[in-house]
Every structure is written in structure tokens, then in C-alpha cells.
Length: 488
Image 1 (spheres, rainbow, N blue to C red):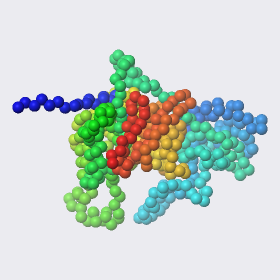
Image 2 (cartoon, one colour):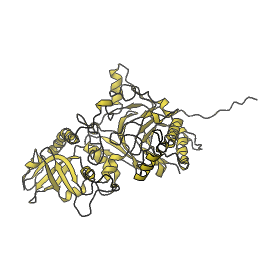
Image 3 (cartoon, helix red, strand yellow):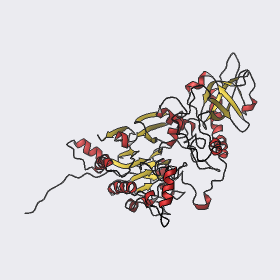
Image 4 (cartoon, rainbow, N blue to C red):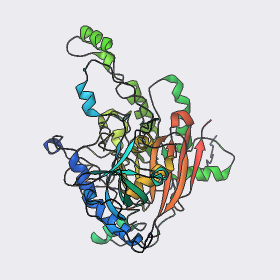
């Protein structure tokens, strides 16, 4: 008996992917850590200050108080008492509760460090806002500052006057605002034109990009249900009587994992545990220091998806990557099966970005690139989590918007957020406005569209931790509309 059963099939929508390698660090001896971090702040000030001054000059050209027009001051120390003026500089937050590396070094090394504070804000109003440049610092004050998000490292122009106490009373501020935003497909079409290829005028309809973060894989048995449901949905194996849902599932064209794929990369052992491990160590190897279960579980999860779904993987604070930003890609040795879908070592990560992107792309954190023609910028959550400690409230989208309008991807680095000591150029400066800005490992899902002075529109996406929320975010690559899918 011959059976001729027919099964319904759905073809996955293709994804156009053109990553940038903005945050790749030099290799080998070219990666140096002996430089001073102060050079980063002077570099940012030199590049962003002219933009801020141009905006401030245009905004305050016709501003007057009691017939007096504000005067531009080149240096913060040139401010004169009682004179209406404005100047630009870098904000520095003087906060007693903020960690100080010099204090940590001066303490006895065997004293346990205090736990990380949720907020750096003081209850007794000891926090001070400073504005500094090459000449020195000036304290800012005034009720207007209470309405603004200000953190160490952001560059602003401040309008006001100096009072009798030597403090600068601020009545208004300006920032660099959103930079130029490239057109959709701009970079892809430019690359095609330079290579002599025909520029595509009509492109197939794009699908949906799935975002997830905080998988927190530990290898435990109790976490497999959520991952299996997620995997079945992305593979289209979840049965449904809703045809629209089946079509929607097939339109997922790429998965972006925004950090914290592992539950904990290297928990810090106590002093007693270190002593026990040294005593039990034999032949130079201690098997208790390595647990292969998390990497094997993540590798299995990715390898099951990769035959039909391309994946972009960002590291996070819990992942086995370098701690300082920008975090470099997770090592391919962690993925015995999944690395077959990636470019061989030495091919992926060319500074010119000329190589063909791989199906499995282990990238940096932060990361930027073009997906279906849209410029995307995202990180694993560390810059926004650090900003949260400086300000009141928990409005993550407001913090994300401020980061873009400051044009600095991680303003608090390297003050309270570890960073590589860049010298000649700082890739954390945002030189082109993205269409989509996503941040992983946030307390809850949030999204908003913001606009710039030149008509730029940016979709902000706060991605929740999957381990806690069992939720992924789906971005329509045609309309940039977002929706969530929860696995309860």
C-alpha cells in the first residue's frame, strides 16, 4: 500500500544582514591597557562639544532676560558672577555613595567589598552636579536640574548665571541631540554600487526579527520547559489552528540574543572555598572549577535553531567574556555544534567588514549593523543599568532616549562602568542615528518611538529577561511595529 500524504509546509522569510564591526578591539599586542582613562573624556568632549555649542548658539541667540542677552563663555572658569552666560562641558556627578576605585585600593585586600548599591543617590542631599572642561570644574545648581536626567560623562550646554556662593544657577540646558540617520538600505546599496553590482530597486517583503535576552542557562533540568517552548515556536513546531499565527511564525527571519545567555559565568568563590580547592588540586587541574552543563545546553539550543534560523549572539554581564565594554564575542570553543554555522576563526571580524556575514554571528556588546536595511544598535543592558543608579525612578525608555540624544552609548564608562581605554577614537560615540535601539535584560518590556530635530525616528525596545518573563519581542522589519510573545 502506497501512501501519498501531503504535509503543509511554510518557507521562512529570508533576512538581509549586513553587520558592522564598530566595537571590535585590536588583536594581540595592539590591545593596550596602560593608557589613561582621562583621555577618553577629553576625546568625547573634543568631538561632541562643537555640536552642542552649535545647537545652543542657535537656540539661545534671541534669548533675553531683563533685556540682557547671554554671552558664550569658552571655559567654565571664565564665568563671572551675576552675568547671564552659557558654556559647554562634561557633567561629573559628585556622589558619596558612588564607588571610588582609589578608596578600594587603599583598603585592606582581605576585607570583603560591600554589595553593589541599587542607587548612588544620597538621602541627605550631598550629591553635587559639576560641569568640567580642560580648565576645571564648576558646580551647577538650580531647580531646573531636578527635571533633567544627568549622569557622569554626558556633555551639555548650560545657560544661567553664577550666584554669590560661586555656584552656577542653571535655567536651561542643551544636548547634541540625534545625529544624522541613514536611509533604509543606504549602506547595502552603496556597497553594491561600489562593487559594480546592480542596485536592487524592488526587494521582497521582510519578515520579523525576534529579540530575547536573559536566557540564564545553567544546565538545570527545571529550565528546559521554557527553552523548549521558545525553540518549538521559532522552529514552527507548535501546532495551531490559527492560520494567521502559523504564517506569522514563519515570518520570523532572525533571532537576536541580547546578553546573559548563561546564568553565571564565573561565580566568585569565598576565601574558604579557594583554600579547599588549592589543597585538593592534583596534577595542575581541578575539575570542580568548570561546569560544562551551561555551555552544552546553550550550544544544543542554538544548534537546533541554526539550520533554519540565523542567530546574532551578544554577550552579557553574566557571560564568559571580558568584563569591560565593549565585550568581545563569545569564544567559538563554547559551541561545539553551533560553530559549524559560523565563519572560521580569523575570517569573521575583519575591521573593514568585507567578509560575508555568517549564519551564526557571535558579536560584540554593544553591537550595531543593518538588518533588512534598518540600522540597529543594541547592548546587553549594562549602560542603562548603570544609568539607573544615578537617577530617581525606573523609566528605562527615558534613559535610553537620553543616551541617544547625548550621542554617547555608555556615558558612565569608564567612571562607574568598566571600559577599554580608547585613545584615538571612541566607538561608544554614536555617529549615526539608528532606526532601532534595543537594550537587553531589563525589568520589563517597554517600547517607544522618539523623533529627532531632522525628522529622525527611532524605535526604542527594552527587552525583558526571558528566565523571569518567558517573553520574547517581535519586530516587524517592514513597519518597525513591535509585539511580544509570552510562553506561559
